[in-house]
Image (cartoon, rainbow, N blue to C red; front, side, top):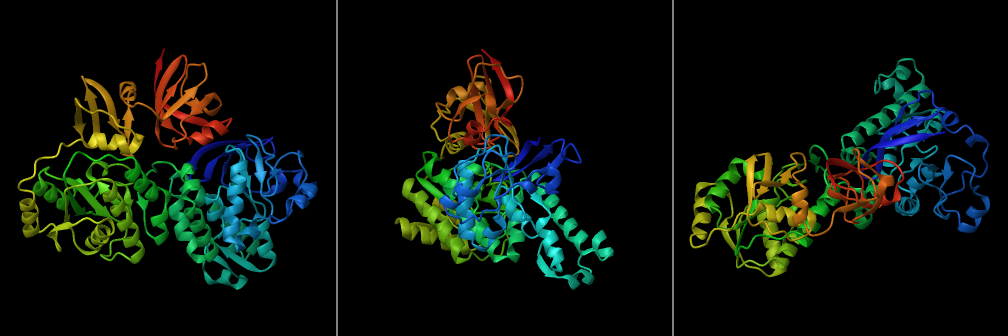
Amino acid sequence: MIRFDIKKRDGLARAGAITGDELPDQHMPFPAVFDTEALFPTLAVRGCTNVPLAAPPEFTKAYVPAGVGQPVIVHPALENAAVNGDVVMAANWHTAFTNPRKYVTWLKMLKNITPPDTLWYAPAAALPSTVHILCYSGFSIFDYTGVDLKSTQDVFCTPEGEFPADAQKGGICGCEGCRNGDLKLHNRLALNHEAGLVRYFIGQSKLRELVESRCRMNANHVSIMRHLDTDYEWLEPHTAVARSGVMRVNSAESMQRVEVRRFAERLLARYRPPNATVAVLLPCSAKKPYSLSQSHRRFQMAIAGRAHELIITSPLGLVPRELECVYPAMHYDVPVTGYWDAEECAYISDVVSRYFSVHKYDRVIAHLEGGALKVAEMAAERCGITLEYSSRENPSGDAALARLSQALDRERRVKDDRLHGMLSYQFGCEVDTKGMLLRGHFPELFYTKNNQQVFSIDTGSGLLRPTFDGWNLIPEGYRVTISDFIPEGDVLAPGIENADPAIREGDEVLVMGAKAYATGKAAMSAAEMKGSKRGVAVRVRKIKKL
């Protein structure tokens, strides 16, 4: 019997380990390529397992067998037949590549009806050039059928595409198969290598970066990625609130990443700015957080706390000073050319104009140049505000800084309350921060009230981590209800009774039970918590027995 343990999530992608008596190695990692005969010995004698994806319901129901073991056949025209812990198979998935729109439509249909703790198998679909997009779509198990067929057709397979067999002699690859002139061995090794590379990138939470680079060689793969990005509402719950490392924004599609759009949506829907009458628009900096850059230190000295500081940046649009350490504001890297294309300007100006339509200021000072200034002017025209200019070139120059300081001569200091802004952004609620004190040194910072710690800042994500006293200040949301037990460590999915729908992987949550409370970080989304029968749901930090 095949068993699996999901250890890492990255969007729809999954990585972990498979165990089973049928396997040559009792503990094998996935995503990976297997010999189908070893993994599913009865599959070869099962009939009607390759019904086309576009087949109508009447035909599909008549021919696809049900209840015949693993893998369980899933099809867009069938009702869900899989249960938690199953391996599911989407037959003929390789044919979906030719129609990216249908690919995504079918994928969403199947994901919506299948339990989240299942493992997905795409027979005959994996090539070195397709593994990245298959894993990005949520598939984890592959076989050698596709590359073996290419070998019989004298096709040389690489992650960049498929080429005539004589390309093997060009020194492109130095694997054992190429050294011995064995095309079949090369194609299998290339597939294994790419699956291993994808597995590594999932482990590093950087699969999106790999997909953006790999898909450039195939227009259909780019289309699949774009179609997935288009449905933000569907993809967002599958995406963690923070990833490890740097988020590299190197392509036009990066502007549509869930993390980028989520930051803007939470900024506009949740974030509450300080009580300020003047806003100053500032350019971003290569160094993160911006406050540590030389230019922003000079900006802050000139402003001297007399205005609310807002940084215009690509791709995030607008970053209030209070959120500069929150993922992804402190974690992105973007190519700097000094030129913002039309798509960037349109997206960023839309975010800025929507912000000023929601949050009103008596004065808005533009201390900008180049593309950022152009975006600010586009936004001002759209939302009907009047900009004041303290700089049109070289904002960090002495003359520009003097004009900025002079423009704020008669303004009062704005209360510096970063915690209030961070809490509203992260938890979507109003919290009274009166009497809270910031202690420590960046990045090890925490907040206290009445000498009791209430919040600390996660140095990796910049998100707030509430203590039990901190949770008492957060009126609602981000709660997980468990059954009648005391957690001995991490909380597993079978123990979850309910979870706030807003919870995403990586969110700070409060676990509530009849016998104990716990604080920790969500290891899966609320939908997965409630739909799964296995796996860690919350990684617990502290437990409080009642």
